[in-house]
Image 1: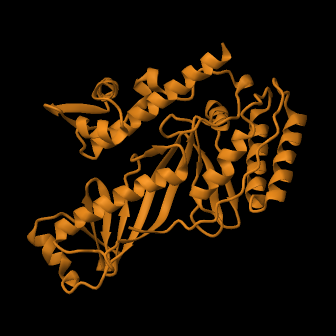
Image 2 (image 1 turned 180 degrees about the horizontal axis):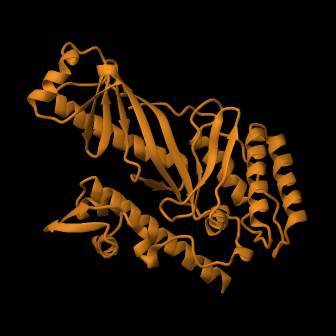
Image 3 (image 1 turned 135 degrees about the horizontal axis):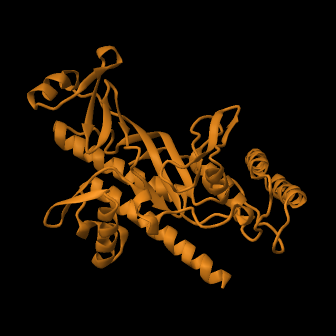
Length: 348
């Protein structure tokens, strides 16, 4: 019975994420046929999610097979809303295997172009709307729904706040976002009738990215109490709870120093909560428990570079939690994870 209930919750969450992903593709101008190919689902499944989005007022039909994205509103569609239904006293601090990447910011180094200093004349001639910022040195345009800053030696791209890339890991989500920025740069090549590649490749640097563990147990507790957590270290903010989409999300957001939101999600946050997946908690002081867990995650992050320290940290987490809460099931031996040290910059 418990397994069936868990499966139903996982299916509801998967449906909610597919609705969000279909919405983002509609906003990007994709047709239902293209969305079916991108998501590897049937046209009937796409039609199902389109009906959900239409019923919530998130999209409207403007022609045969053509939809327009409005403001995303997940709360009107109760069947696909994530994060409800369970009592506070029996929240399980575990993680579903869905990560939502969003808030991407890219800086693209561009080659020396002979006429780039005359780009304002080009914008005026083509009647492309722009704003002058940065003391007149930068022009800001909107291209394919993204804010694009045209600088003398680089192009900066801000993906829309509601554009998400849902996957099983932060690294895969970032890869999907990278594919989109490459496609956008190809579009800018066509718009300005030049190539922004250097040595046949776009020189892309990611300088902003958030990864959310959707339906996180700790985030659900804080959502119900209308509280928040923001975890800082010497390199700045790296972990927070966000509920702007009603999805009860624990997010990694750091991009400076030893903080890297991709590695922090895949090598710290997900392994930490997965090690607790078989231990539901019962506690009266959820706020105190939440801050304790946040401190322990930070401790786990500080020590995850070495295998020996990771073993000690995870064991300490389980021992401390066992003194504060009453486990309903036996605790399995936690797995040991090592931190990925690969680089996150791209050339594509």
